[in-house]
Image 1 (cartoon, rainbow, N blue to C red):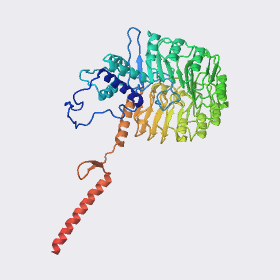
Image 2 (image 1 turned 90 degrees about the vertical axis):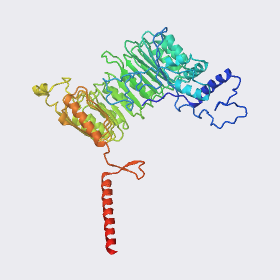
Image 3 (image 1 turned 30 degrees about the vertical axis):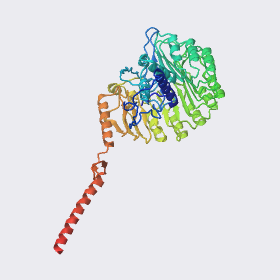
Image 4 (image 1 turned 180 degrees about the horizontal axis):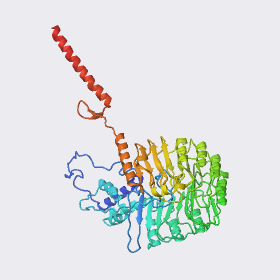
Length: 592
């Protein structure tokens, strides 16, 4: 759900007062006519209610989100959304914030950016009359305009220009898309319009270097959140020393998220305010020193290259000494191994709640045993791309039945349907589970039925069945489970189901007893299967609707639902009462 941008009531009142003051300056002599009814003031007592500004002239939410797109310095194209898009510009995988994403967003399915919409400004300035109501209405209109229309509206008159300037000054969040030919001067001029900027998000389509960081540091003294994402052929040329100087100089910075960090080489970050750190596309780091005692969440994603020479063991040892307050840890690297897990368990992370170790093919059941024995309060565990087996899932279920609510084991070829069924049965608090590409054929992406029948050595891997019954499960992802041919789900709270590329799932072997199911993804499945899914989902939704008869009140003013049995009993009681009255009248007639 999109929220409208807003500013605080204090700032809004100050801006409106300034607009009103500018209008009063232009008109020194008062009007001879009443401002309410238009009659002459002399000897006139107006009985109309005054049109005054409400105590809270605007919504209680601040005008704070501005997203802009710059082309070149000569032809500037700015697109702004009054409300932020449903998904941010970043491509960073939100492995530690699964409440904000769907279960289908797995390792190979990145988030897509939602396009912003340009709105045109159409106001007739001839019919706008000065006054307090005009100031309030003007603020409400201008705060919903994109930057291009806001700049055009500022040219109408002095009052509008002052109001637009106040709105830019009140902005607290700015989202900028920087195309390939944009110049750094435009970014600086745009940032200088927003001195109160707290949150800044940059989507870089050109090269990024230390000049951009210097511009941000100079123009945004109160910056707390910085997010930089890359797209296309853009190159992030920021080095580790430049990043370290930026973090040390921005003493109020609490969150830093940056993509394309392949040229860091090595870095040393020291900050007492930083609580969130996301770095993507890391490669061959010579050193990694993070001295942030208040760091709560860290996400380190390394490039998927075999020649990566980063020493993960030393890195994890350093985190255990300097960042003891970590609650969420996400590391994605092909160099993850059991030795790294042992270094992680030796760290003093007493508050750890979310652990994500992705693409570690050398992570085995022994690693799961070390994690389970050291961290018994985990709420999220992501071991996607590891060599964990059903035995490892059993260890997780034995230690974390009272805390674990999100389990992700996608791309784990050694896990079978039996292990998944056991995990769902032993984890009562489970709400999200990703089992993508687990129950699948490792030698073929999309095998056909003919290939299965002609290849007897593969028969044991196929025709796997899955029966899941869970009271709290809300999101289930089975994408790429090509060996699954039968599925039975009895999950009353399930809302999101991903069956993409489940090519061998048979329509007659699919049972969905999920009355709250809202989203089902079946790309790459048989046409008969998609038809069966539509039929069962529609039947479940129809069964959930209330078809009980309605009973109107005596005054016919409102309808209420009456249970079917109660409705029948009421009619029977009425019939019985009518018969009784008839018998009584007959008896009275006989007596008389």
